Length: 310
Image (cartoon, rainbow, N blue to C red; front, side, top):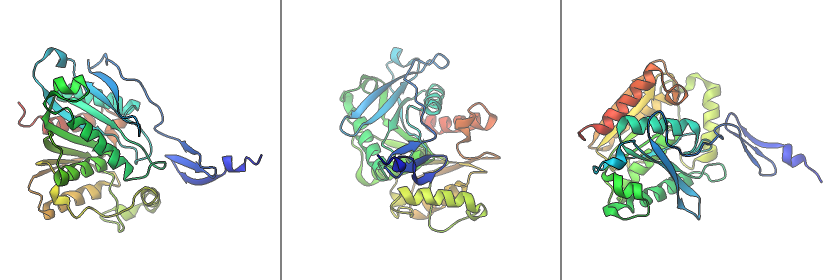
């Protein structure tokens, strides 16, 4: 038997994955997963739920330590993980640990969405899966739905979407879809976009200063995405507030600023806030969650979510 196809590489996208000529896909990064737990440091409890057995769409749910003893329902955070649409999961250690800290600090109930990833499932499948997850969340309106945590502890009238990198891209698209289609039973208060993975046909700002890095991003973007443009219906975002978080050394920084400018020109009537972390690079807060800028970023997002909730 000729085994050459099993070792010959058809496409190589370091540090993310390789596609071999026999169709096999080897992910290089973001492959570790850990189980849900009762986190000893934060007291946050988590569990996994299957949303769609047919597609495998699922989620990891988080509740803070004091929730079960309280009758008061808490704001709901729906989180979309990053990883360039192709690596990482809702069950990755860095996202599990980040959501534990986030939920404890913000005192929210969280749903971390596990969507199908490219290249096996190219965009827009991640968007469709995320929308499926949101409709599942919405099914818990008025004490209905299958999950006791959401029925008993989550206030669907105070909901936020958040994500980093590709997850921020998804959060944007979900916010837009809520604005265009509605999500019965859910009131989307705001979205938080951290180091958003946006791109385009032409370089803007300082994007053309690193040709090699730009080339890698463009190759991956073309491989996954059917469109390079911002949606012309941007002003239809279904929330009243947007927080855009930017890192000074991130190649996607200028896209974040550009997004904020487009919101202002689109007719969007909500409030747009921008926070830039000086001296930091893409998703620095996941790589070093205890540094000064990571702590400041978390506190800013928590403040954004808790604004007006006291």
